[in-house]
Amino acid sequence: MKATEETAPGILLIDKPEGPTSHDVVAEVRRAIGTRRVGHTGTLDPFASGLLILCVGKATRLAEYFHILPKTYEATLMLGRETDTDDRTGQTTAESDGWRGLDRESVAAAAAARSGRQAQVPPDYSARKVDGRRAHRRARAGEQVELAPSQVTVHSIEVTGWSPPSVSLDVTVSTGTYIRALARDLGRDLGCGAHLDSLRRTAIGPFGVDGALPAARLRDTDSSIVLSARMMTPAEALGWLPRRDLTEAETTEIAHGRAVAEAEIVDPHTASLANPAVDDLPVALVREADLVAVARRDDGMLRPDKVLHVV
Image (cartoon, rainbow, N blue to C red):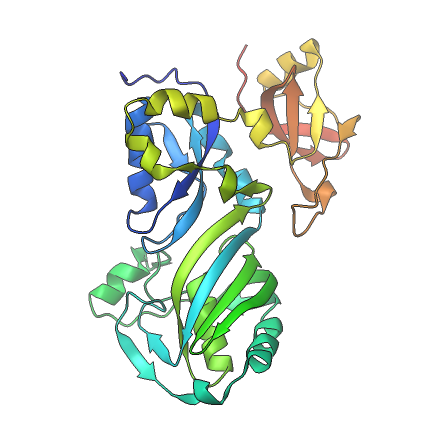
């Protein structure tokens, strides 16, 4: 398809396999749709698989709102070995057979103790920046990496499989949480070390991987048609946000960057949000099923932050 900047804005759910990077998947979608204006809302490591949410066209401006949503993973940890990357792709840095004295109950208790808000030190091999350079670039160059901890939230963590030294977990976390680092820290809590052996992202908020298009379909000859059919509109994709329906006159006001009254906001069902503080969420401003803008609450008014509709 010939590249065009008139591509309709939308949101795609893609199931990434193990192997390619998230950017590889973005490149495939760009090729299939015929536009460079495609972005992701959060990457997966190459060895990981699962759900990617991609924004197309003007919808790339909405990527930040998906960061509000919790992420759910199926993870497998391997006890007894730490690596420099905190996952199976790295070099061994420490080994222990202390896992032999553990049972499922003790591992489950240690995992449960990792739930809640906490400070997490990102992996040395991560995209976090240290003095303007990516940490993984410094680590690969043999430099000492010292990353400041970030505040993250583990909303839930459950042991789903026990075949020592392998442990399977279902984990739901806030954006910015490294499951590799969680595996590392849980191994240290248990006194034997651990690394992440496999990872699959199964959900982001209300969006499940079962509803995603397998990335292999992006290379089909009819991929552009398939993607067009699977594309959610911005209003559909942000249906989990509180909504304010606009009149025609209000739509014009918002399109020019002016505020409208906060009245008549419809709150969504927020069971998919791990922290459903509806009053703290942005508000989707909609006119006849089209997303006009996303706004913030300000002293009884809704002030547009991102405007998609232009008059």
